[in-house]
Amino acid sequence: MGFFRWIGPLVHHHRRGLIQVGVREGLSSHEAFDCVQEAFCTFLLLPDARGLSEAPDDAARMLAALVRNRARNVRRRHHHARPHTSAETELAAIASDDVAVDDLIEQLEEHARLLSCVARLAEAQRNVVTLRMLDELPGEAVAELLHTTPGNVAVLLHRAKGRLRACMGEA
Image 1 (cartoon, rainbow, N blue to C red):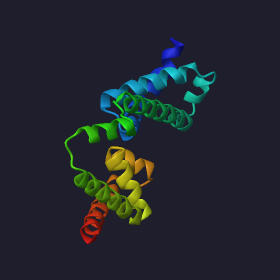
Image 2: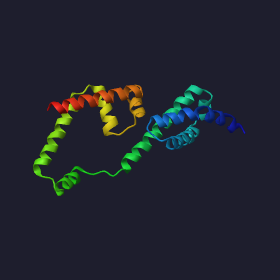
Image 3: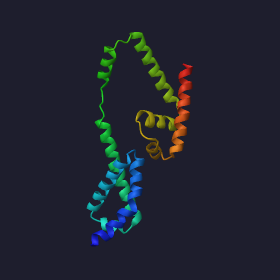
Image 4: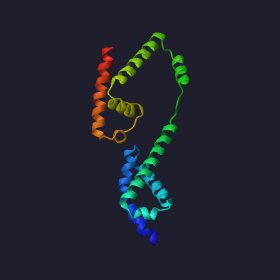
């Protein structure tokens, strides 16, 4: 019975906040719940788990770190599970398509122009464009990574898109 006296309140006190940590890391609520369960299992294996549970702030920090680590591992596994193609495969696919050489050169020039425009963006906007558009992270995850709010991420992305449109229209 002694085990349930200290673990029960710990779970009930921290589970909601820990699920939010997982969701902010870009997981669905179900995936975040699984990460929280795994984090609690890992926490219980710590030699001083019971002592940590008596210091709520320390326990919360440790559990949040465990959930973040699990969530990032889940995201990493999802990323690696997606089909990846090599540059050679992509070039072979482009070459096998019925694309005229002039059209291909035009596409490459436009791509180079876009990269140049992205390089001209302010660092914060460049980071938001990279994380949101290329890495396809949710706004909440980008906000946490950049230590800002999701609203600010949306504003930075909106302004960056406007600058990119203007830059692409100039050339």
